[in-house]
Image (tube, rainbow, N blue to C red; front, side, top):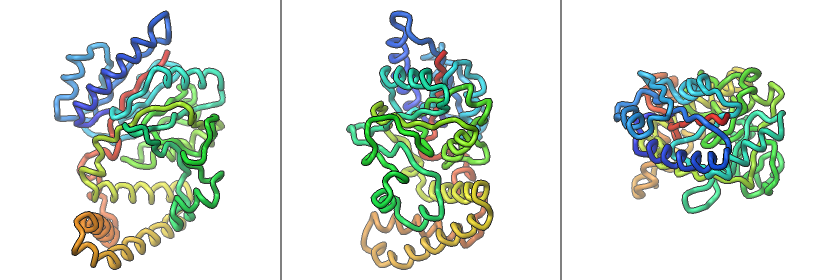
Length: 324
């Protein structure tokens, strides 16, 4: 899926085309590539149709959000497995081959994700747990240190396949048959935590969610809305967080998390105000926290955040490739 990221999308499709040419040598796997355009106004659709006429383009007239846009691609994909791919991600042929082979060899696995790398080779967070009240009260790094088996990270996992609670969706391999049981991504999220909720539903439907630490893909994170609009991005995350707790934990849990987040924002705004006066970066962070606090105090108006201005969040660009 893409939203106003023409350059990244074209680069992604060029990279994917080279990978698929390699895959097709000697009668290898066949694949279709589906691009979902989420209401772009930067001529992405015309550019893709001109340079990649073989790509199936689904042009949506307005921005439906990350999950709804991805689901458009999932509905038209015809392969036995589907790769949901950010346009700022690059996947080598070996990764596609290994993930597809793993799905073929393990019929009880619904979702597979590789280890994500920065452009310089550093590892990125590729797995996580669903948020709980404990994760809201304690730093993630402390939980990973104290209970590494329950809160794994790329620092503690080995090279063997690992069943996990949730995967980061920049590069996500999906078994098409699983969709009949667990459904597609939940569209009640505009952005953030929809993949976490989806992984939860997949596991509840009896399918495994597996991380392959020894298989890698590069995630450039080059067009993050966190950089473009940090205030709206943080507000959208909070909105998704409260929705996740409401639908999965209950209203009382959501209220407790809301109060915890409100107090955190208030504490930060008050204690960091002196630093914000003298430090540029500190001032920018303080302004974000102040804006988030104000959003809470105003009753969390729906017009604020990414959904309010029709912008998808941190890694919005998706190309769906379906392996036959």
